[in-house]
Amino acid sequence: MHRILSTSLLGLLALQTLPAQNNWVTVPEQFAQIPGNVSLSLPARWSKGTLQVILDAELMSPLVGQSITHLRLRRPAFLLEGAYSNRQLDFKVTFSTAPHRARYISSDPAYNRGLDEVVVFEGPVNLAGTPAAAAGDRVGADLIDLVFAQPYLLSDTGLTIEWETGLAGTAMDVSPEHWVDAAWHMGGVDQGFAVTIGQGGCNSAGGSVVHLEMDRGATPGFGKTLRFKLSGAPANTRVYLLVDLVEEASADLIPGFGGSMAALGLPDCVLWTRLPAGSQRYGFFTARGTGTPPSQVVEGTTDGAGELTRQVEMPDLPELHGRQMTAQALVTEGTRLVASNGLVLFMNQASFKDHAALIFIPEDHVQTIWAPWHGASPIFQFGF
Image (tube, rainbow, N blue to C red; front, side):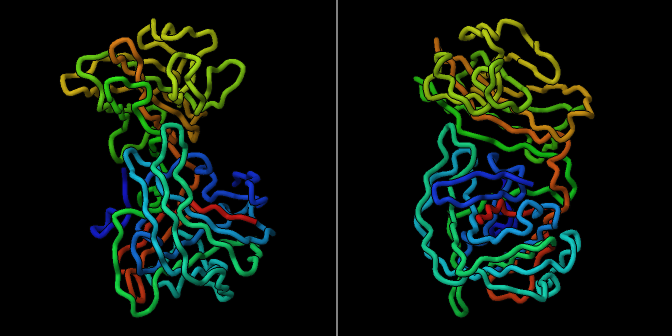
């Protein structure tokens, strides 16, 4: 997992109708149903400080002309990220027209504010406890849900969001929990990245919790070598690594991205890759290293520690740059198959590029003491 700005500094359109009868748009849109690759200490883990974000008009275009009434942030869904407890915080959230593009964000917050500042929310908030992500959860639970006193009409411009946490004169405390889900292209250079999705270990009788990850900091892409690491499996056992394009369930897919594997004899398991129609239980694993590019099935055997590292050579397919691929491992455990978590790979680029940037201002400082984070943003959900 990756953190942004812990105490050591390491810390467009997805529209749906929810029970509250609001429409929701996720920004950046790519993360409506996919988790981010990093998490932030503000606005909830640190009890005092300011997060300022600039979102360019390209990211906000689905909301132009809409009256925004709600704002949500969710928790991350990293592997083994535990449940979060309740937390009481004070927030002040201000919107304004961004005076410049995100790539020009300054360490001085005054330079990033528009002249039309509007306080959309101010007051105490009780953050309810949230559960850890389950095997089939694509994203983490909502962590913060703010309802505005008055709607905010978004114009055809970029947006500056300034989110202040804590009251003047109060002391800083740092929670071990309460991270906020976010996405980050290091340095604002969009070369793609990998995120884990769901949790591993379903269908295990022996307690195996199988994790599949890529090298930290890897930028997956076509024309590159993808290096996967499996851990938590039984020793000296067979592994089937599936790599494929993201596809939802359809007539020729069983059962499709995020579908149940119960019909294949794996109760409570979720498939994050796809299987060809007509596959009978484990029969689709009969061929080794097969698949139609870019789809691949790669076999291997774990070592004595229950780990396996495999490299997969991806063909150079420029027409698929920007597509999402998935990877998942199925591991033999006696007569059973145990499913790992999934990986979603943003191949070569994730598309929001340098259209977002942020700064962190700790406690009562008037400006940040760190360099701005280009190509970074919390994953916002705007309700209207």
